[in-house]
Image (cartoon, rainbow, N blue to C red):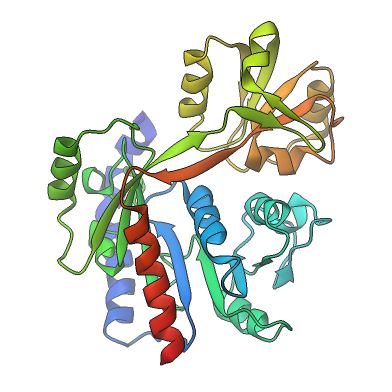
Length: 339
């Protein structure tokens, strides 16, 4: 933790108390949550920063899109619009947010919408024709005004929530006890070769309840890079020097991956969800070959020549037991549909 976070430590008990009281009021029914008679799945985390929510939402989309009428609802972080909005492939990231536009670009057949008011967003989605049968809430773990039927909590391998404290000194948005609301906890961004002994040790540290299930996942970097029209095998990059542009919470895994491949590149890191200025875009236009993340690509694709701009596709993959995870999701949907 940096110096400023250290000196803000006296605020930690205040933040803890405020978030604890808020959650307690919802738990006791003093503050009201709206629940639904159709399947609503929330994906989120306890901490700020990147825990792999987008890849996990995309995993759910791939699993469900051919079986149910599916919709995703995000707040549209850093967009310059307000209220409910359905995302189209012609939308701009500045209008709807980068992650929702990424979902729509990759899964055009899925309804993608944004609304900071999740109650209004869900109601607006259900008024559409066709009406979504299942709604995935992206980054809605702390949105207690809505009570999802199923909660998936993510925590990263290198920054487990059980080792952290609340803001502003730590990274937690709420107390670690908030994990009790989760049906499933997934440790994301694990090494592919994580041992059984380490998984057991992590499970003990997380101290999950008997009704909670623990999974482990990793980020799978595809062997191809892509742009609007083409696909290129990553091996071909060994013949050139390129510029890596990242505007994500933690670019280190991607940087380490490219370094392990022996690639030569200059890395320019921007803050998470960065809205590029005109000057920054002009500077990027002078680069010969740029690779960026999928999230950054949807922000940059309307500003840079497509022949110089490429992105690195990724997917969330389970270390093991993905069939168990899928079965739990489908069982919840089937049970809720029968009620």
